[in-house]
Image (cartoon, rainbow, N blue to C red; front, side, top):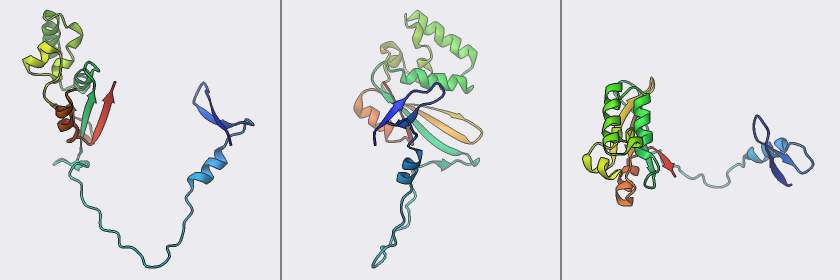
Length: 169
């Protein structure tokens, strides 16, 4: 069976060479066939709780650590800063202060990154040196943003704390 991708204005779909949808064949393949176990049954150990999995915080919300990783100048700190600004964690006067500071350093487009890159070395060089951490919440979830540096050993320390990773490139 030959499948090709045919772009559709509303969504992509797969069609067979003869133009018919392979839906029935795909459904048949995706439905696993149950096989009765033979012989001695194997004991399956009880699942072990994973400390890095989503946890419930005191107010009943789940907690997720999200790390942003990628190469230098991919926009990791900028996206983290933008999320914090849009979620109401940073007020307008603070943003205006960061805009002025970035403009004074001829780095006008970096002002959102200043939310995550808090030390002077990071702001002068324009690179994240240490794993940046910040928090925001929704009705059901408390998020910790981890802004990982591009330097691999430091990036690994940030990534090892994450439940979810976003690779930017």
